[in-house]
Image 1 (cartoon, one colour):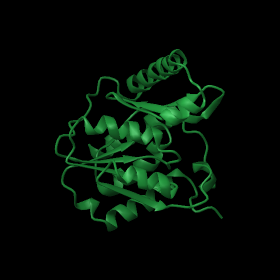
Image 2 (image 1 turned 90 degrees about the vertical axis):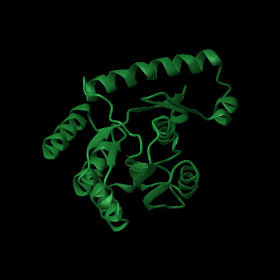
Image 3 (image 1 turned 60 degrees about the vertical axis):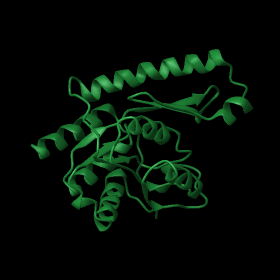
Length: 218
């Protein structure tokens, strides 16, 4: 038996932990899911904490020929991180890096337009911001979201995930005010291995959850 049935159940368990930590008492709380997979986790959290649900679009910069290996990431709002060690070890040229980033920037803008439309980005100044994903491996995309969020001067910045390896959690802890993580297995391998059901999340599912959250808030 794997610890999480699916993303929704992982989100419910994460919500329980956050309630135990008192986040349901935060007066100015904003919940962001990292699309696509972080949104089904963030939805039950936002519902349980009675907080608005939004998205923070991030894109991994996959290493050419080894796409699952992140050499960096970009996020809405200008967040950008680069793993210089991977860039150097894989001998990635500046032109190749630029081409990958341009492709991912185009996809980021497409998703931002699809998910947000004309809805303005919320004001984060002085508020408690929860950044949620379905798990962290290297943490590259989360670091990009953190970098972008920091520019908007939140009062507190918190990362909440169901599962991540200990070294990634330690690294993220140095970038935010708190990390809430349900499981930190030493033998990690991949996020999906900790879920019984881990299909790719579709744009349609993200949009449906955002609409449901909006209707619930109204």
